[in-house]
Length: 216
Figure 1 (cartoon, helix red, strand yellow):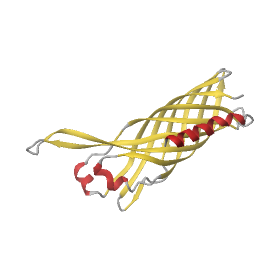
Figure 2: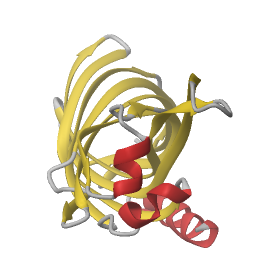
Figure 3: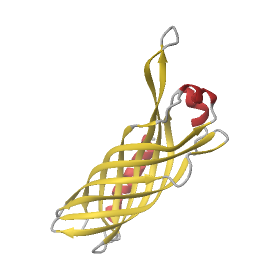
Figure 4: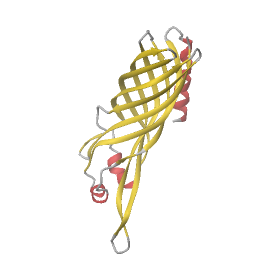
């Protein structure tokens, strides 16, 4: 994974050599909040122990991005991110007599290398841009961390997920740098799991800040 990130970083930061196309390159990151819009598992252990709907977790994402093909109101943004997505499952904790004494939770996570290509529209006001963007996204699973009870279900997860990225934000621009804050929504178009083991589909929200170096 480290070698892959180094190679991707080298590629992104070599893009300024193509100054007629690329207008800025940068780094952004923030929090990821994932919700399983569908969770149905045929695993009897899971169904017996984890009777409540899974709850969202807050995880941290980081991305490299480049913006180019820019006109007055539009540009194209390519992004490569490490974006972990996960939820928590709760179960009843019992004492020695079998009485419920509270709840415990198990955290599960799948880590994705996420690639997106979005069209960005903006309105300029002095040194500030208001923008919206949307485009296709591909998530490629590169790691996972899950409780033992979930092994049978999670091992059947699709390792490539197609979806969309859409968001809005504010960008502050000077001659050399631009600073952004944004909110992004990532609905999945394909199922994370859809077979005899069960059915899982997810949506994700991201809140991020970033800084970019202007090339023009």
